[in-house]
Image 1 (spheres, one colour):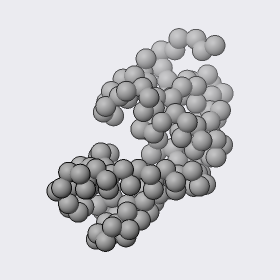
Image 2 (cartoon, helix red, strand yellow; image 1 turned 180 degrees about the vertical axis):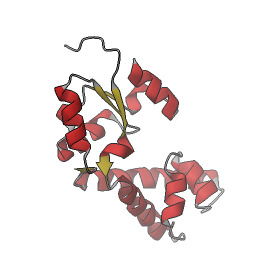
Image 3 (cartoon, helix red, strand yellow; image 1 turned 135 degrees about the horizontal axis):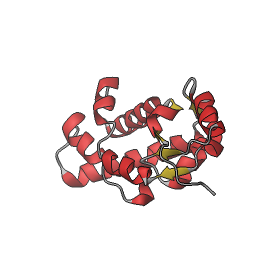
Length: 156
């Protein structure tokens, strides 16, 4: 059982695992190729990183303004991303495992903030060998709509 702490560490999903941007880039490229759209470059994918897929499709990639088509492409991106996600061999970013291990040795509670669902988050952490180093996680099931809300929930 964790005792109440006056301090703890919050970790953003993107800062813990290596290759997430590449995974996102590949999934957007697959959707573009399958639907005859222009391939997004790395800068476009970075701009779209925290956006809902529908917003990225219309405002960043500018593939279409037709809402039903936008929703179809957004769903296709999600399915493509999740297929690639399940096969991806996740690795921790350099120094992450050592830092988390040290925090755990000193009893500092660690919480991971992820926009993915809990099952996917745990799968990725297991593959990277980091799951045992996080005492808590805030994931999509927790209903946070913004990164700020996610960090507030994780502080609790």
